[in-house]
Every structure is written in structure tokens, then in C-alpha cells.
Length: 292
Image (cartoon, rainbow, N blue to C red; front, side, top):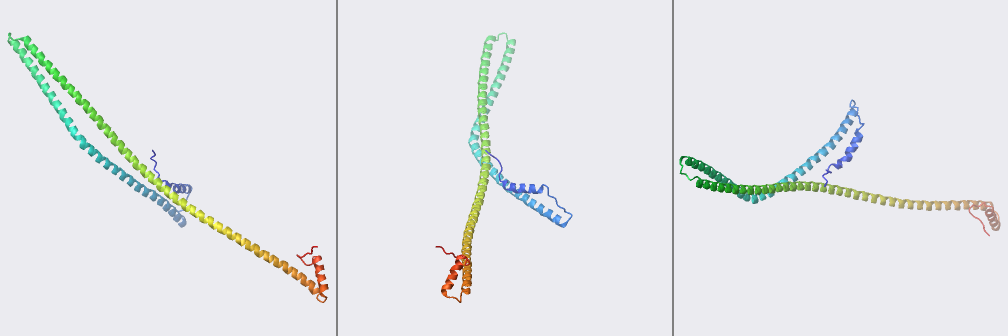
């Protein structure tokens, strides 16, 4: 699962552009123009710096608030677990205290038995009629009973130790689970923030693409309208040129025929007609020809 921070990527293009522009940039600050240019360039760099720093503070505060919310939620859950676990812990502690009291009692009995054995041995020395074997047997019985109680106490200690080990393992497992839950929750918060940032960037890109598409459509429509207008203008130009060309042809024909008519105005219509036919045949009248 990625933990890459993408919130600052929108500054990358501006930063790269500044780095390329800034690499070999120098100003002659000994002149008023150079000093002003240097101040303007520095102001632009500080504007970029302040933008990055402002976003850093804003994003950091959002993450800190998420971690605080996670910790508060986890504390509430842990408190509920402690409410259930503490009564059992109190019972375990009480049982352990009983075992310690029993061990102390058995130790006191053993000390008393040892003291009694010492007293009885002294009495035997002082009293030849002391029944050594009977007392010895009684002492052995008492020692065996003490050993049995000690063994029983040791078994109880071992049982309690095992229970404590199991309880400790449960506590360790619960703590591990809690930390893993906190880590997962924190990661989930980071992932959610990252996803929200990506969705925001995607939405911005989508809006930019939509605007770009609309602009392209507008330009295409303008080009199409211009093309149609150009075609209409060209058709009109051709039409006008054709009319002008025909006018020129008709004018040249009229001028040529007028010349023939002027030259034969004093003759009969038949002579004038023959002169016109002759001029056409000799191509003195342009754009007109006779085909037989």
C-alpha cells in the first residue's frame, strides 16, 4: 500500500520552470532597473515558497487531527476492555495472595517442626527413657506432611505462573492487536486523504479536459464557419469575375461591330451586313465565329 505524498505535486511544474530559469540568472543590482528586476524575481520565488508552506501546514493539521481522532477512539475501546478485564485481574491477584499466605504458613509450620525436633532430641539426651523410635517416626510423618504441603504449594505456584504467563501473552497479543489497529487506522486515514487528493486532482483534470474540449469545439466551429464563409466569398468572387468577364467580352464585341457599322453607315443594309460577316470571318470581331 503506497504512502506517497501527492498533495505537493501541483507545485512541481512551477518549481522545475523556476529552477531552469534560475540556473544562469543574474541581475545587475547596481542599477535601478537591475535591482527592480531582482526584487520582482525574488517576490515570485517567495510567492511559490509561501504557497508550498501554506499547503504543508494545512495538510499537516488535517493529518494530526485524524491521528488524534484515532487515538481517542482507541482509548475508548481500551477503557471498555479494561472494564471487563480488571475484575478478573483482581480475582487472579487475590488467588496469588492466598498462595503466598499458604506458603508462609507452611514455612512457619516447617520451622515449628524443626524447632520441635530440636527440642525432642535435647529431651532424649536428657531423658534416657525417651522413646526415640516413636518420636523419630512421628517426626518423619510430620516431615512428609510438610513436604507434601510444600509440593502442593509449589504445584499451585506453577499453576498460577502458567496462568500469569497465559494472561501476559493475552495482554501482549491485545497490545499488539491495538497497535496494529492503530497503524491500520492511521494508514487508512492517510490512504483516504491520498485518495481524496487524487480524486480532487482527477476532478480538476476532468474539468480542464472538459474546458479544453469545449474550446476545441468552439475553435472547430469557428474554423468551419470561416471555411464556409471563405467558400461563399470565393463563389461570389468567381460569379462577379464571370460577370465582369462577360461584360468585357460583350463590350469588345460591341466596340468591334460599332467600328464596322460606323465604317459602312453610308451604305445599304445588305452591304453593312456583308461587312459584318466579313469582319467576323476575318476575326476582326472577337469572341464570335461562324460555323457551317
